[in-house]
Length: 253
Image (cartoon, rainbow, N blue to C red; front, side):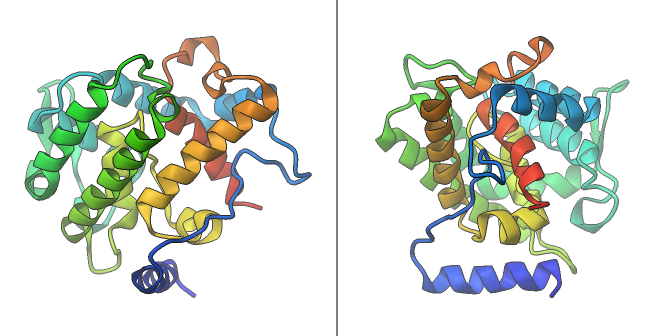
């Protein structure tokens, strides 16, 4: 079964099932024990300088007001570095640093037109949450606020799908990575294998809630904060960015 067929089946299933219970344990090892902080730190170090550099650039570029210009730049930077521009609807987009210009803006612009208002409103809501650091806001906010963020991300995700679709893609991966490019504090980039083999759903809101619940579970079990499991040079890395490293590892189980 192809990835696109598998994802289409999940889309069809989700249209019938209003709620999907996720069974994946990204922070749990094969021996049913939570990964140790040292194991997670090593996975982050092993994941590669390119990923860490790109993620830190996205994190630093997303902390302030969300505008169309910020969206275009962050998407261009992340998509090109995450190898999403070799083919498909975003082929050839990149950020020209010398000219401070997005190449292929016309391919990203429709995504902002479709969901820019919703994204701006969500960023304003997240920024207004008190008593939480940027890195940890996903699990530090109240459960009701957490649910609202997950629901809003799911609605924005669905708005992004049509302009992200191509002849051989449903747009799931691109939509999730666009969200991560402007909401690295709460959103998760999800690749093809993760939809079906790791999370077993395409309900993006459920995935966000599962991520938050699993991080809280891991921290309770270990007595450590997940964001403490990063090399010193990456101390500003957000919880979803850390979780994504382990989700990539979970694909091979």
